[in-house]
View 1 (tube, one colour):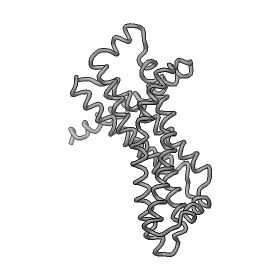
View 2 (cartoon, rainbow, N blue to C red; view 1 turned 135 degrees about the horizontal axis):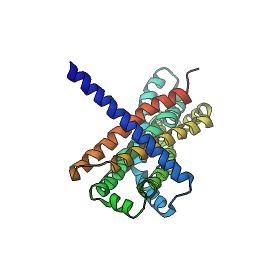
View 3 (cartoon, one colour; view 1 turned 30 degrees about the vertical axis):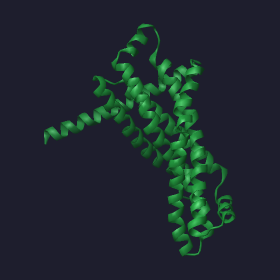
Length: 259
């Protein structure tokens, strides 16, 4: 019994140490950004790597997610004679929830893991120590460009995801449920308001910060050689996705309260 309590206590301590490390990394990153220590060329390069190269997989993933959502909604809507509301339901679900969340999950798996692997490899091969020996702060040189790239590109990817998911839903609604495109679009116009879009993008900014911080923190704290890089990369994806789901619920409860 004592061993179980001790293990639980150690797990709690490690959890708070991890959260504290993320908070300190976040504050240090904001400090460098606030002082204007931004490297535009590196930031643009990271935008291309993290954002542009992720467009295709984000669009494909969310298009089929919207298609499945529309399929399930259309089945019930047509059954009860309310097929004209399917478009609004699909658009609301994509803009508020699935667009931001699926985009973040895809980027965490694709780009977040790449960030951790790159920084982890630099750590175990002592390249980060070399940067520090040259009086170059690794957070300023490595973390800030990746943080800014995520903050800028993930909301933009979310816009593509919203469009792709809604389009996929409209195609399925027309061909499988017989819901005309103009009915689908009218439902969106009558249901979705601009604040839904902005609040969904607010969520994507939070997800972007989480992905960037977790990925960089895991990479900068990698130990154990090549095996350690693999473990850090796996942990980066797992922790990012867990944070995305937890924060998605909290943000949804705050931004879209039940009246």
